[in-house]
Length: 173
Image (cartoon, rainbow, N blue to C red; front, side, top):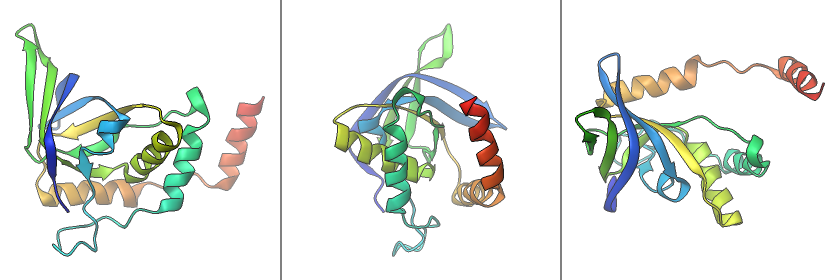
């Protein structure tokens, strides 16, 4: 579970804001950067500090297949914790919330590991580049990170097959 980057990464056109008192960064990175600037804290990591289940290769393949649909294959931002290792630099005094983000270490991937796995598979198969949206917290402590991961993964409820079939019928008309 290493959070070291081979070299710093600069991300341009980032919006810095606050969410409930926490500094956040929003932006886009190329898929080649996205698959390398974060890591998952897996529950079976020997350090004992992990909490995520191992990556399900089938879910990654399914997402790569979804991406093959082309322009209609939209997806949500990945969610990261930069753990205080990213530095924001505003472009100028007139645009204090818009600037460059320097990533000095990998962020923790809190949500989106299967999307990133599918993106990695897709770009390797197609030799293409995607624009990957992200939302990163500047700093969450381990307890906050785990709590947010738990909320995201335990409170959401699937829509069920009957509603899914109904929605697909609506889209076909």
